[in-house]
Image 1 (cartoon, one colour):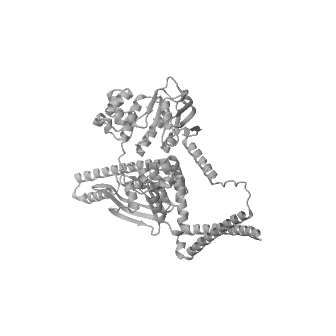
Image 2 (cartoon, one colour; image 1 turned 45 degrees about the vertical axis):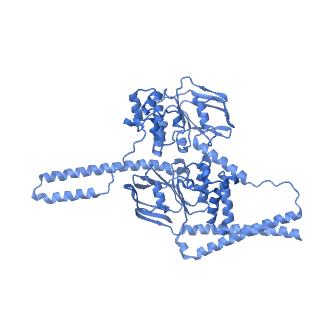
Length: 604
């Protein structure tokens, strides 16, 4: 079933063309990740498909009876409502007979997101960005739409909420179109990828790991485009040369041959062979280790402890060998950056020690550019001083980071966050260190710059310790994980994916423990209390039987409608549901009869 079909869509901002000729189909059950460079028009396309904006050209056809849910990037930042008003607005759209269940579901969801009863009277603008994003998600999901269009849904969310959202989407039968820079998220929840590139939409085949498959298929597509265009140009120049030669030497007797060749050339030039998209300038550099990789330790820690108002970690003991890659992970505020600063010598531990190999040369990449860069100095001066290199090598390094010419002489205060990251990387490149300590190195970098940085670090022969929220980055680079959470810590071999699997298993066991029935208290129940409990259980089972009967009648009405049989998938789903309801109904009736017999035996 097609939920949205769009054809030849156009979008402009003033005289600037964002895209034109976009066509595609969003089908039932798909989970599509939409990716592209910043400014490619991803959010614009979502707004068109959600009906927020009107296209300059083209058509959009939406399924008539399908309900849409749309989440904009800043939707929770724009409202002045309180959390309670948001809850009330969501419940107003709920049918009366579902009001109680929806109300309970919404409050359970908000509780799982960390909201307490006292939060309901607070305006949303008083919450953090992550809390506002969670509230907006709950407000959207309670409507139970048939398909959802989500623009950067993981922005501002902590890792636990992102995991919850991943599991929700992966297990949902709803349809999703999602814009996200979180590549790990897209790889877990998606079925395939759409790429918006230079005003054209490329749809990639479904895959078990759609983002990984997309990266490989994208490079093959670009190579094929370059080859096809080169062949077209070569054939065109060859035919132009033949026509030019014939024109210069022809006589009246071979005029028809000239005309025939000219027609062939004209047909060739009419072919729609678009030039390949020019490769974007991205970071191009190589990190050199001070020494060649080999055996031997880089550093080892013994019993590290650090506390402020509370203990962040205690007893951290670990060792790192040359060439190893270690990730430090944990919730926000758990002490990850603090541990990295201790390893860098920027901060003293309350207890414990760090011992380095005396020959190890260290480079520390701070999370905040202002921690290391003098904003009043020029980019080239910073690289010269921090990297210990002359002016020409410094300019060459900045040029490879896309900061060249007069830009290198500008004060650092005039550079964006992403550009400052690149200046810091240029300083890093100049130092030829054996150990890189990286705190959120991918912050402010777009996907292509992140991929370039990952490739550089993958080839680096030295050791790496990194803190990052970019799980795709960690999955690609790191072989070991040290986790910190609420004063506790631990170490996991096998890389970041092993850590993720361990965390999900822990969460599954925690939820099972919460859902397990509490052990009954050892109290003496009087006959009156037993009868009361039986009456409650009987009424509950009777309500369930009534609900099952109502749903069974709805399914039977659907089977009585000839239009139902036009959708084979729907027919199969209805048949499976009818069978399941029949089995549960029979079980419920048996349970009801047993409870009723017990109750009647007490009343005799």
